[in-house]
Image (cartoon, rainbow, N blue to C red; front, side, top):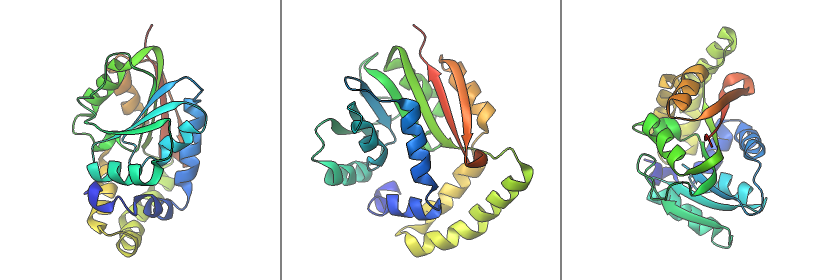
Length: 219
């Protein structure tokens, strides 16, 4: 499914999110705070839009994704960036050594993993002691009124727009379902703690449509 939408994926996301995807990406980059000399894993990187922002701060970034179509599109677009590499990878069985990365991050991909709790443990394994986790993921607005408006948009408006924009509108039906069924901010924070991370915290973006989760691997 993701292979089929790779070419137009970023453009469609910008339209469906009404441009908020760029704000969310910028907030995630600030939370990661990449620095020269750091090695960062950007998991579920898609075509590498989030990864490029990290390389611009001097970090060496591995953009990993389960979809070979996304990886191929990312390599085509960003082949000239020296400190960026693309790797096809399963989040539940990462092809990296223990304690390989200073920071690991995952944006809008954790809910697509068959076993997200196992993925959080794998991310812990490949992170250096004292290293950081940053997860940006769709969530649930705490305001009942705003959440109702958000659900109306996802149920009624998003499918119509997706059919006019995407080569695979069914993929965006899945998007709506995966957002609706995903746990709230507190539950995901609990999963992160259970995986072994410490100093777990989150803050809402766009009134809770998205939540930015942060944590640290114990030293």
